[in-house]
Image (tube, rainbow, N blue to C red; front, side):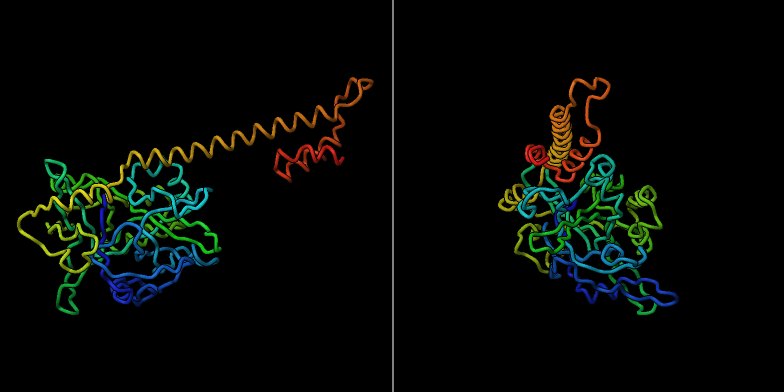
Length: 354
């Protein structure tokens, strides 16, 4: 589970921290503005639906590019799947997190994996709001990777979190492609699960692992899923104050470490109603939509069959040719026209004009 994100890096800082190997040199990823033209933000308290920095294969944007060519872009956190429904921007449920074991069980995610829509969220870390005994009060933890020592600079440097994600696109009414993503969560390491939630975002140990996840031509779906696991030796869990619970608090105070828990009952009610999406309701919502699509397809096939039977009855040959019930050539021509029109309501017009 991931409740909030810390994305205080600027794009320039990210390009400096993310080092991609190009022959014998190390370079940062190029920044590409996607169709949605979302603007990057810098905040220590990023909410769901916030624009976030994402690494993805350039092949998803431009034809003829190898899948191992990586670019930096901005996408909205909270997946809006490319279902054929009206006004997706008003869809009540956006998918912020999805469990790894659900990826092969829900058609939406199966499709994204098959298309290679794998991407990586880059951030400083994320927050979890843990319910206490009475379930009304919450304690906040900031989870991130341990810093690494730069021998060249002789100091510790920030180590970005590379978090596994899936993205999707759909075309808006203005013709622009809208990009959004959801975070993949995995089981929390056993020794840490007593402190934080049982699920947490899948964090890659290195940029190399992150690039393997993105490179969908070289690393197939099954091999990529094996990369999704966390190792506790790389993780740091900091107890922070409830300052982050207030949405308007976006400064570095959000990640200030404290020694004792702080409880603010006035804040927890808002968090409960605004941030905690019922996963079961969300999954049921997705299943209902996919079931409706399936039923619509079946209904369409039934309508086509009924229309075909209507054509057969209309063009039945006279009884003096008992061996041939229908004029086959005429029947094929009419039904071919019907399929092109792909609209059962027009069948009367077809029969009247021939």
